[in-house]
Image (cartoon, rainbow, N blue to C red; front, side, top):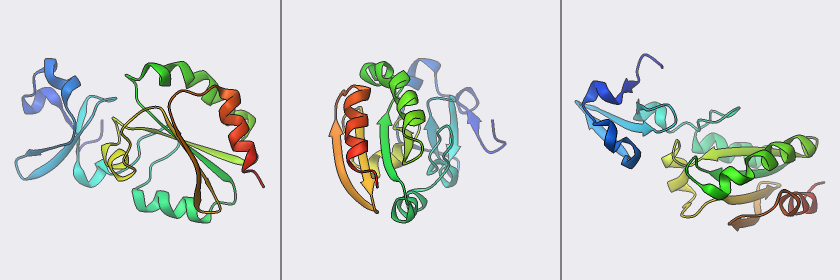
Length: 158
């Protein structure tokens, strides 16, 4: 836990309600967002970061990455509670390894990153978006097999 984060118990949220939390909360004069994965409240200045395996970027940094990337980018929006997302998890890891030479996979947990989910207007999961040469080339909402996703990614490789 970072020194600026607060455990829920410290600010008086009952544990029963933590799964229902979303959005921002004002604690004193600081605005916090709830990070469900780590069960902490994060100051708003930090909560606009993508919290993922290898990525820690703001929306602006994400847009810049898409604009300058020489690789095809597959963005995979998911959540821990999503059944189809859980089913896809091993396949996404395999896909990431199989296509690493020409595709970058960015996994975004929408519960841990509500600002990113709001910015991209994510209303259903799982959701996939492919960017090629800085432009959105394809998107899909709903369960696909690893082979179906790979076929789409391969359509957009250089």
